Length: 285
Image 1 (cartoon, one colour):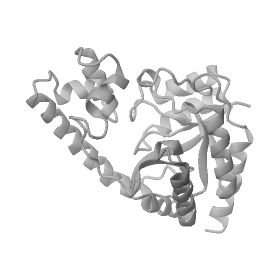
Image 2 (cartoon, rainbow, N blue to C red; image 1 turned 180 degrees about the horizontal axis):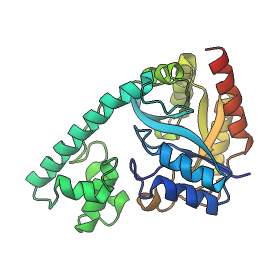
Image 3 (cartoon, rainbow, N blue to C red; image 1 turned 90 degrees about the vertical axis):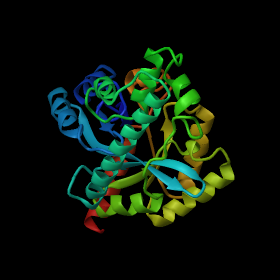
Image 4 (spheres, rainbow, N blue to C red; image 1 turned 30 degrees about the vertical axis):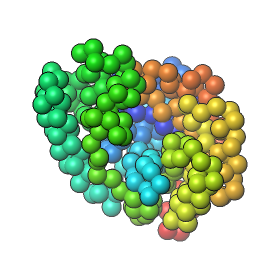
C-alpha cells in the first residue's frame, strides 16, 4: 500500500488541479491520499469525485498557518471539510484577510516598478487560491529571480522586501477548532518550527497538552535521520506519526507524490491509526 497524507492543488498554492493530483496519485500507485490545501476545503469535492472514479481513498484535509511565540508553524487537519463547522467559519474570515493581503502586495510591487497586476495574479493562479508562490512565479517570469525558491529567498520570505504578515491563528486555537469540528490536528514538517531539538520537544509537549493528535515525521524533504528523530519525539508524546510529500507540482519540483525526493515511504498503517483515533474522538468527544 502507498499513501500520501500531504498534497496541494491549484486551489491553494500548487500548480495542478485537484483531479490531476488524484490522477498523479493513481500513477504513483497510491491507495489513499489526503488533499491538504492551505486555508480551504474548496478542492475536496473535485478530488473526491476523481478519487472515486480511480478507486483511491480520499482523506479530506487542510493545512493552516499558525503563530507561536517561538515562530510560525503549520498545522494539518484531517477528516474535516464542513464549511459551517467552527473551523470552517473561522476560515472564511481568514480567506478575506488573505485577499486583502494579496491586493496590498500587488500595490507594493507596482509602486516598485514591477510589471504586475491583480488580473495577472489571477491568471497565474487559475483564479484559485492566490498566494506567494504565484507572486514568485511572476517574478521568475520577469527575470527577477532564477526560480520560485530564489524568488522567496530574495523577495518573499520573512524579513524580505515583499513579505507581508498574514492573519493567523495560534496553534492552540487551531487544535481546539479542529477537535470541535470533528478533525484531527497534526503538526506539519515540525523542523520548520525550530532547528533546536530541545525547543521543539517543549513545543510538541505543549501542543500535545492542547489536544494535538499527530506529528508529521515522514516528510518529503527530511533525511532518514530526521525522520527517525521525529518518530522518537512522536512516540515520547503518544502522538500518531504521520507523513506526506508536501507535493505542490511545479512550485516544488523536487517533491513528487508518494515518494517526495525519492526515498519517502509513509507506513500504510498510518491511516489506520488516524481512523481509529478519529473514531474514538467522534464517539467520545
